[in-house]
Amino acid sequence: KSHRDALEREKIRLQSLYTNFELAMQKQQQEAEEARLAQQKEQLRYSNLREVCERENKAERMELFTAMQKLEETRTEWFARRENTLHEIQAEKMEIARDRTALAVHKEQQNKYESDTLMTVRNREERLALLSDEVEKDRKLTRQYLIEAEDMRKSRLEEKRQIEREREALDNEIRKFQTRNEQLK
Image 1 (cartoon, helix red, strand yellow):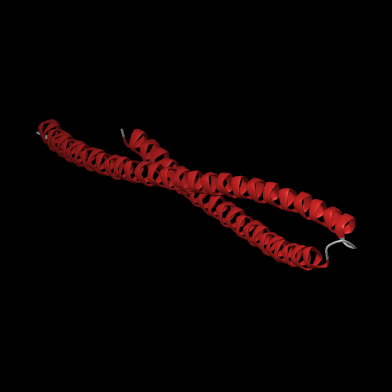
Image 2: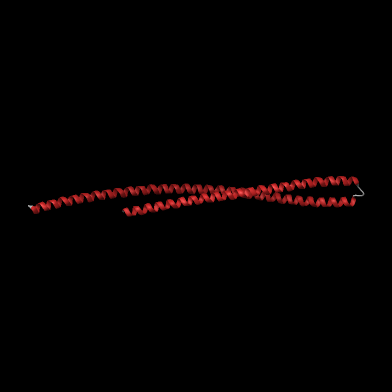
């Protein structure tokens, strides 16, 4: 009878162990399923974040490209105007030099011509001064455009670096999560 009792106790103990084993297996399967769902959710979040980052990056690149195009157009216009102004200045200088030469040759003979020519020279010198002022204003404006474009480029670069840091941090979190998930399996 004691042998039978021992067998009965062993049978109960084995059934209890088997039941505990099944419960542990169910719990482990449930945890693995939860981990898999969490990983899917995290991957979806990461994919969405990556799409948002790519869209923002593309928009920023387009904005920067447009700004650079405008800056290049402004620079080209400025150089064209500057070149034009320099030609005008040179032409004015040459004309002033010719007028002065003519004035010196005919000074004694034509007092009225002297007066008219001096007036013409003064007008042209005033115009030359105005043109020089415009060139200086254009130079300052272009310098300001270049500074603003550089500031914009630096800002975009810093934003891009920040996105890269966030992306790397997210990649690290996903790798850690996947490692934990592998360990649970």
